[in-house]
Length: 336
Image (cartoon, rainbow, N blue to C red; front, side, top):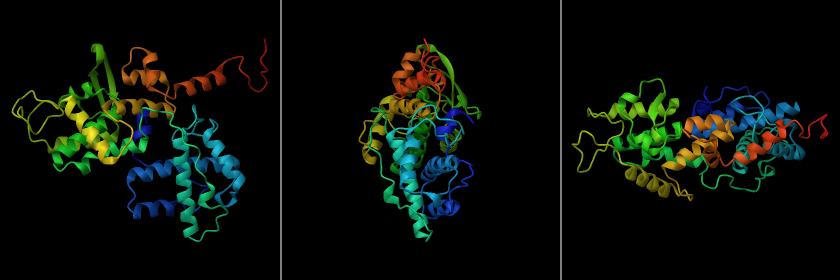
């Protein structure tokens, strides 16, 4: 699975939650109570952190106590944790927002256990949230970005417009494309492989990659089209409706994103560029290398990429500590 799919694929992880009792019942509870697929996916991913922690201590949920709660929070904040989808040591620390999301998932799971009259040694309130810091001041939380991407389906009255605008936002976040690159696409650029060859800024060419999720919404939009226009995204109204060369304008898409953000009450200013920024930031948070992100974004310089990836300072510091030959490590006491 590609690094992009690790972030955006809404397919459920297929792990073995062997140290969490009644976990299948909990997931069934979420499904039967109409939690969204994305919310359930995030619960599953976040509870993997908890299960991995328990396994690392060779304990079960019935063994939890106050001290282990503190240890779990320290585990989440460290790079000793195992990433939930790649089963390897994390390369950067989780943000406070991601830690709190994990804690919220554990609290919901424990509340479920108590409701099931399971003899749980801890209560949800003991998993207190950590002090919130915003490590990515220019990027909305991942859940907010997902809500924004999905919003055209419910906020647009015209099904065709809703499908088109949803497909545009899905494609932006799945690929990290610039808005100008997206709106230049033609239908023939999609060949079903999930890979798109584009000509970007400075006429530089590269491949970008759709997630399966984004491909589904693009296919749904194209299935509703009844015209023979070559452009991938075309307007349905306006004075140029009969123009064979018509395309969605950048101003239109930016205005719609602004409207969706306001309807959803997302406080942070969010634009098409924010989806590109979020693409890079959350890839980095999952452990993608800056060099790989540079290629995906089409940046000529890695310096440009690190401006997008706000986690890069932490990533660089951790890399220095981990790999420098004279850094303090077990058995290495700063020899000169």
